[in-house]
Amino acid sequence: MRFWVRQVAVEYLARKWYLFLFVTVFLLAGIAFGAAAVGEISADQADHLSAYFNSFLEHVSASPVSEQVFFRQNIFNSVYIIVAMYILGLTVIGIPLVIVAVFAKGFVIGFTIGFLVRAKAVKGFMFALISVLPHNLLIIPAVIVGGVAALSFSALLIRRRFQTRTTAGIRSYLGAYTVVMLVLCVVTGAAGLLETYVTPVVIKSVAGYIR
Image: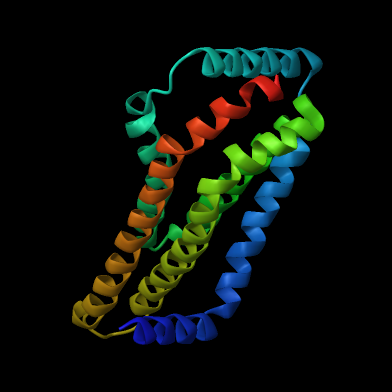
């Protein structure tokens, strides 16, 4: 079973390598633009964000970790982009919107890391490694795979519009597409659990040092 799954994954990567490259480039571009955007915010905005961040660290270091408060929010934040891409992939206009969603996700990641580095320099970079990177190690590959799957299915719908075949043949593709996206929801859901139950504990242990 494990060998079969790996073989299917390798074959899919070989057939869709150009889409994987395309989606990855847009994700990296989003990260780069997000990091660069930090330099465009005003000094007042930067001071406000820094004050909010310091207040957050003080609250975390002084209060017990309450996972239940963040559980639903973190799960939603982790899964919603896969759900959004799945829905966009079901439409013939989904291709540009999927690209925008991938870019936007990269932008948020890049802006977050860039702000932490601007606010706390080396300490901010270290904080990003323990607070932003862990769950994104699951989310980023899921977003890339989800983007490829959504683009592929949306392109399939466009091709079928110019063909005279019935829609019966598309059902198998829809089933496979849905299964892939459900698996990615599980992966991103696991990232949300990691962000809820593991990341806050780590942040609490280093909050005093980061301040």
